[in-house]
Image (cartoon, rainbow, N blue to C red; front, side, top):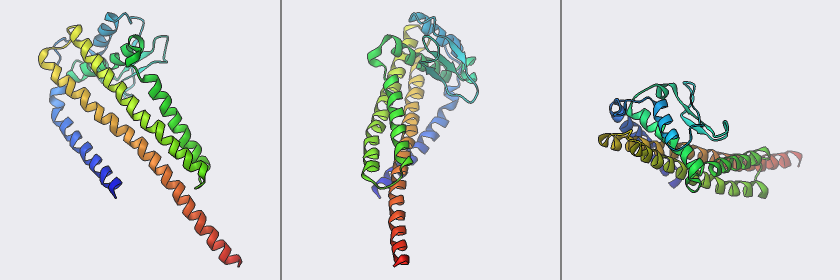
Length: 236
């Protein structure tokens, strides 16, 4: 019951968060002080940090803005078309945030959790899949799910730290390179910090998946037990 209340409460908070974001949309779409597009902002920040060899490319309309560390020699930043050639506070925030990932990955290794969060996600997914392949209420399966909770929790923690570090680094680079006005700083912070809640919501779904898998194992045990009981009654 407590778990259900927590889930409903979290969904309500996400709904209120969505309303708050919607009310701020006009401010996020305002033109920026520096009059640069997303591509130009990212290029300026990367060049200033001696990452000129790291390309900034236009992604497809259906892809998220992302820094892919394994794409190319130094990685690649992909910006959605609506940010690549656009000039707005939202674009400013997004471009700086992805540059924050790249800068931390290459220059501030202690601040980057990109690799470890990726690996914990892979481990978490593998454990859940292994448990589902042999779906039963055996000790092996229970231990698989219990062990799977560890990388699942680490996935949220390391991923959150990675996003937080990229946000901090991105805002710092905007100020250092005079790409942001004083009156724009708070709006950019609001946008990036609100994205952190979206991030937590996404990984909340991963944990829900883990809970769902665990529920399937329990249901399988109940069905298995009842089937055996009916079978023995029939043959007796």
